[in-house]
Length: 184
Image (cartoon, rainbow, N blue to C red; front, side):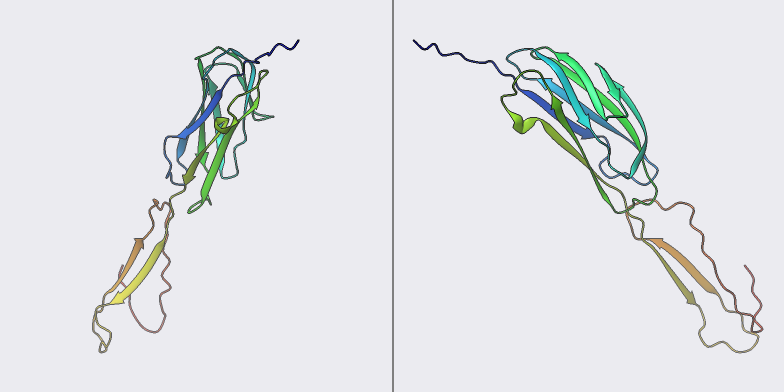
């Protein structure tokens, strides 16, 4: 005689968000990783993996449950009862040299002791696009055909055509040495 056995699985859902999807270089951003036990049973041995990509540094990790191991990039949540949620907050600094790049960061379920009935929601990706700086320099003169002794004015304009904030901008002007006198 056969007796059917139903093995109760569970459904863990992982979500990842970022507070500023369009930061500038040097900005501090905050990721929030959440794992929720959608049930119907309690989960044990819950581990979430979150490997941060190049372009970010200066991390701080604050889990409300469990611990985050920076050597393995694993957040050990442990037990997560039916209906409960655990959250990991990670702050990071956007590195110099990343202007105009897109950085994807994925958190995913690494382990759970019970079968997960819906693996389609076991990972989530948060994407940032680092603001781009695009500097343009123009130089114009108010009189292109001056006579000897005339005063002319050069106007140098620096424009940021990008969506990022440019910092530490220096403009160098090479002045000719052919008898002109300059006043700055």
